Each structure stands twice: as structure tokens, then as C-alpha cells.
Image (tube, rainbow, N blue to C red):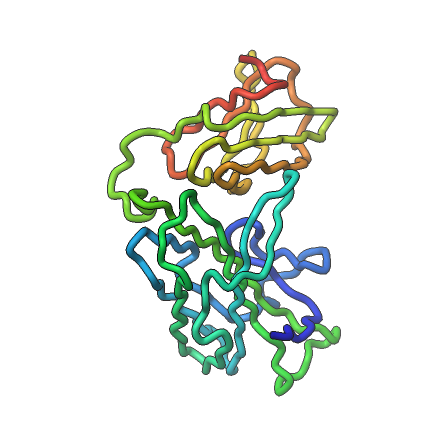
Length: 265
């Protein structure tokens, strides 16, 4: 389906994303943002599940139009890659939502056989331009794009969101890679040898003398099952030569040390 051109977008949700970042570049006040809201912000299909419910809400004073597209999500050569997919279907794919109203969208699996490994997708939910409303004074429309991660789990694997209690911390040894710094720039490469994705957040550097530098206070991103991801980071300050790199993995309460080439062990 042809996607009408957007003059400017704001991306929100979970990474690949950052709240209130304009894709064309720069930032914009939240007051200029669109009114499309999406829930939940992550979906997991267990073996027996064939459909999930996604709710699109309009928090603004005018009707809006929204489009839901399914993208297969992979990490190739350390980079995020999205490609159109029919493995999941959104019904309806297009909606018009009145002020203060919401629309139910069913996300349906085309094939119900459990995969041999965890599969990853993204639901791209776009607020579409409204030709009935005038543009802002600078000739731009500010529209929301939500990127919702979706995971189809292998047989016998329980959804992370449904686990009442965590049995143990994520096995940090599943992550291998390297950490390189030069001045106030760094590059982190992580390969996930496990069967499920690992979410990385609250990245920090603890020097040998106990000085901590928070590099990514919030979410850094995901490393998908059996795949590799690379990030180029700007550091708030130059790091001490000797130290350890720490991060929270998935929903773990405590950060763990990433045992990577280029860090102290």
C-alpha cells in the first residue's frame, strides 16, 4: 500500500526509537506533537496464540487517520533492518479515529506453527496527514510514528511480560562483543548467543577508583536472538583507562558487568 509522504514526523515508543525526535533532524516541543497513542507498547506471541489486540487512541480535538504496517525486524552487520512482512497481519490496516475515541486493531499470525527460534517484528503505526486541517505557521505538520516491537516465541517459551516472578537474572555470558573508546566517543558491539532477545539499558562505566559515568541513563536498545548490534555513542566525559562496563539486561533489577574485549575483567 502506498504510504502518503509525511512532511515531518516525530518518533516515539521503544527503540529503534527515541521520544520526540524528528526524523528529518532536530527536535521539536512536545506541544507540537500529534495526538495518536498506542497500547500496549510490546507484544509477545506464545505458541498457542494466534492474535493480539492493539489499541489506537486519539487524544486530540480533531479526527485523525492512522496506518499500521508490519515489518520483519533483523540486525544485519550490526545495523537495524526492517522489511515488509506478511507473517503478521493488521486488521484493519487503516483507521479513522474521532476525537477522544479509540480503535481496536487485531494483529494476527498468518502461520500458527511455533518457530524454531524467536522471531522479531515491528508494528509501524503512523499518524497520517489530515488535509482538512491547516498546517502550522511554518508550513509543517507534526505527526507521530510509533514503532512497537513484536516477538513470536518458540514452543515452550513463556512470554516475558506474563512472568509474575523472575527466576534469575539474564545470563550475561550470552553477550559477546567489544568496547572501544577514543576521547569522548565510543563504539559498543554486542552479539547475542541466546535464543531470546536481550534489552540493554542504563549503560554506565565504573572506573577502578569508583567514579561512575552514566552513558545511557535509559534504554539503549535490543540485541535480537542470534544476532549482532553495534552502537556509536557520545560520552559525557572521557573515561578512565581502567574500569568496567555495566548495563541492565531485560527486566533485571540490578545492572551486570559486560565482559567484553576492550574492558577490564
